[in-house]
Image 1: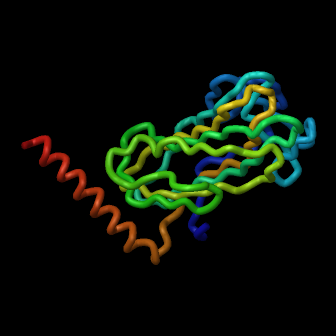
Image 2: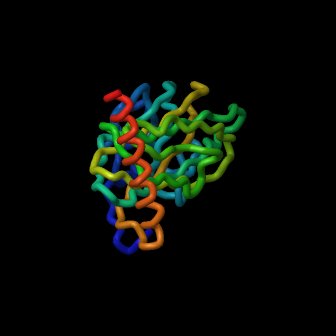
Image 3: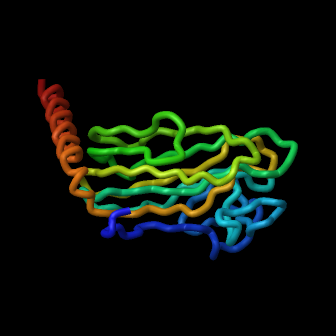
Length: 215
């Protein structure tokens, strides 16, 4: 990250109370239920083999967590990272993991980049974007932690929402989530040309839409 980066959201679950089938996760709204587990619980290793982490399938409810709104400033490079692994419990099928990045209000996105972890395409640029859609991946049970990272720049200030969830099976052993981090930084000088081009494309698209409505 650039030296100017500041953290605007962080959750590694280490200070969250241990709980099974809980709907209480600091900084998040929970649908269904999840497990907050210490490292080593039932053979599950948290990132760095320490602290606590989040099992996205509770005991026994499939769950998802959506962050409280995370505020960001206009023109900043916003970077989202998290660590994800499969659940190592034996004799169970792969897990389905879902991730979504959304906004509380429509945003004009001038740049969007997948940095690591994500398989295939995800995200977009353009005007009046409320969601980047849902990213889905099948995780084998013994897959080690992988760091997922993406970044974007919005032409205006706003609030983002992060959703992490499981799609089953409902077997009390889901994807393991840890080390969620959102950083904000001034874009590096080398990226400004790309961003200015993106700003121009977003503005042109907005003007075209207004012209179509007027017609």
